[in-house]
Length: 279
Image (cartoon, rainbow, N blue to C red):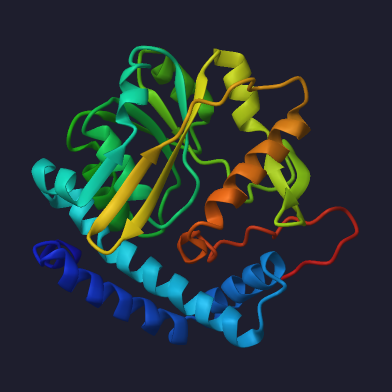
């Protein structure tokens, strides 16, 4: 179905995707509950009606981004370049051949931005095995079809990804999920103590890599992948302070388009000792 739909013009595909998102909002109660809980924790000033409206917009954006995965897996390079604008690409070109960690927060456009960068630069990325192996094969095949992407499963660990990075690939890294208490510290995210891995600082310290943000936003005509300024004075001397900086940066980006951040994830599943679960 996704292969068939990728032939549609983007405006029509977007309509179908938003419709899928609204259907998911109604039908998938568990993820609706997770999303509403996350939004309630991060935006306590919202009324119930405002929170529900934001959740529906998020599901619509998610539905659209999900169906548009077919574009990144099967569309031509020329079409991808038309649909995904790369802003600040010269910052990546200036770092070609040097160790770079791309800090890529989980916005719904994450795959669009990743495939757009892959058209211009070599990338290594980590992935999680999917329950549906046919879906996983399509996903990995789509990401690797231009010969510019190495994929490492989380089960293999980060060391292999770092070895590939040292050979000149940019490391596409997304640390803003709940990976459990191991190697995490509790620092605020929208004022909520949040288990945040310290991997970004540790990997930058270990490899001497430059950290460069890559944030992709959905727009009416496609996507815009924005390459930010390389982080100065990072990592610092304190992993906890670096984790605070990470979360503060992501917060600032979320506020620019809150409906596009990945609220379906149980970001606050791991709680400080003695604190009740929120889901």
